[in-house]
Length: 453
Image (cartoon, rainbow, N blue to C red):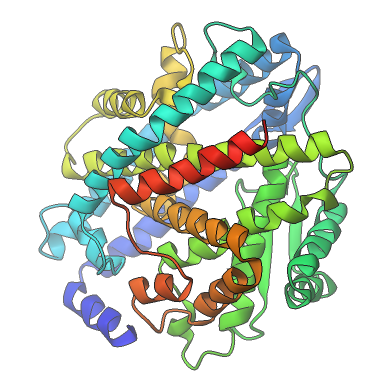
């Protein structure tokens, strides 16, 4: 695997791209500076956008609407600035691809990312399968949501509130409690997993509280010398923060399991494998979520929301991926054409299953919230591939927890010393995103949701 990757890197290396990569790195960092500085005032209090998003789960519809509109208006303030930045990034990226002898940046990146196991054509087929098998299930869920909330049509600010009519779930009180509860959760699955996170806490390797000026997002960062990971996130006491923590915790477990591999490059897995580690943990941990929720009804709500989110991941990933295919195979486009392309692609996959009439400016600008587009181009389809794999691992886990957990950990311990399909096989699942396979896994989630009704 290592030699194959090195050969490909040598093949596409060009001296003239080195200064371009430097310029790209500097330009890409501007996105975090711009978005990290965004804050809003709601009810005379200042919030980061991550904190303000918690209001979208409030049972008060007017407050939800106010919060959503305030967030979108704040994003629109920097719309033109971010469009100019993105145009610069596209121009530089296209130049990189031409220097390396490619027609476009999409084809260049498939080689640069070491995508030996699938092609752009496979991505188009994958998107079609998601549109056919997953979007209808989510449309049914949206219709059910409208009926439960007695709201028609659903607006974007109606999509995150619980249909139970109860306040948003609060799984923890602060960052320290989130860390402690997650250690307990992992410990219950396997004492060794709990010990890994406890070691991180003892070494101050968590930064989870949201604060003004802090960069958005969440990630796990491996520390090469010690073999330990560092987890960064912006928590605001929401269910989303719980899933972010167990997601990054899956990455952390992966870091620990690969720490002793002989070469550093063996530890750097392609995202289809890295995200399998994290997304599987989101689902595997669900059986232990009573750590976060005292009431059975809250636990059921949390599991239900998580399973719907798992399905919702697939069309959104397809949107961002298909959008990137369009962007880089049409490098001469302008900002207005880009916005129109996004709207068409998003509409194809349900457009969040909400009514956007009268909200066209915000609808066309939604893509700007996706940091991957600015900072790590073409790193997104991996989430859908890994999400499918995670569903398959969870299906195995429900049938035989001990066997499925062993297969999952054995697969992670391989790092990137085997081809991707062999790593998936070691995990007890298939590296496959055909219509039939997607239908099988979507049906499994649909049945799991039915059990929670």
